[in-house]
Length: 372
Ligand SMILES: Cc1cc2nc3c(=O)[nH]c(=O)nc-3n(C[C@H](O)[C@H](O)[C@H](O)COP(=O)(O)O)c2cc1C
Image 1 (tube, protein in one colour):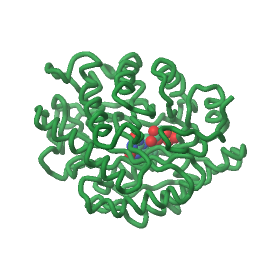
Image 2 (tube, rainbow, N blue to C red):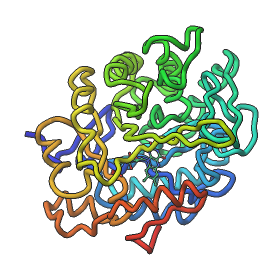
Image 3 (tube, rainbow, N blue to C red):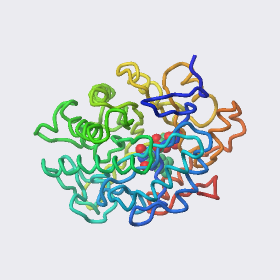
């Protein structure tokens, strides 16, 4: 029976145990996307016990940042700081992966040629006018993902994760809600996955089959017209064929619509609200694992109690990622591994972490006032 303490080796990437730090945008980077001392501090504290750290959404282009302080890998000068970050994480004994992203029409408005890039012009806020991508834009974006991945490798990361969840650019292509294209990039799940598959293949072509590529996908989008579990399974199979090594399975737990000046905007949430039970995302994640046959990372309130350990024991997931609870208490992973969950300082799900990011401020936490 697999346990939380077991190591896992994928394509030569050794993870000493089955706990992961999922990508958590801190907004601690500089306005130019560079690593800061606060970034180093945040990850140093949270890489001491886990088997894998997935560094927060890092932009492949300056016009695709999620917040102003998002990290970047769009230019060579950013490699040095990222090398320091990868070294910090690996020096603590954890594998280091960085999540690559373009926020598409959910970007922070900084201008730029592909600001607001989107499959079909679906707007997420009044500040960013969506840009419907043509073939040239798509080709350029695929190339930018591959170049950013090459910089990640140069910086010493063990692998990259392609962000295909949470309604950022790739997810906008995957979701039937935001992809209404009538060309070869729109239509059924296979067609909507074309862009994601091209990104993965471009990374594999550039860096070789053996460089681990993770893919973050929404198992489900709990919003009318969103991606279903069957869609996600179909897409995940195509991603596996394209070379993805690990699926990091997230969810759109809920979405609200906000009306501004007569236009409706979607506000999707990637973390379960307080009334949802721990591990609510485990059953769909396990279905994807079973149908696709790739190792999966599960996420969603796995930081307290025994749900992470039990989900791994039952082979429902291969790794358990712990997000907000690791912000609140960086020793969470060590305590879970030691079988002492009662010693964890609990996250109260007040969501001030999300709220601070949404306001464009550096990450804050009501429990851990000493951040980073
Ligand atoms: C402040 C904050 C920032 C986040 N940033 C990212 C991100 O950059 N990329 C991503 O894929 N998910 C991001 N997430 C989602 C988390 O990775 C995770 O899936 C979510 O918090 C659910 O896990 P939890 O219940 O353990 O917190 C973020 C979550 C929080 C709270």
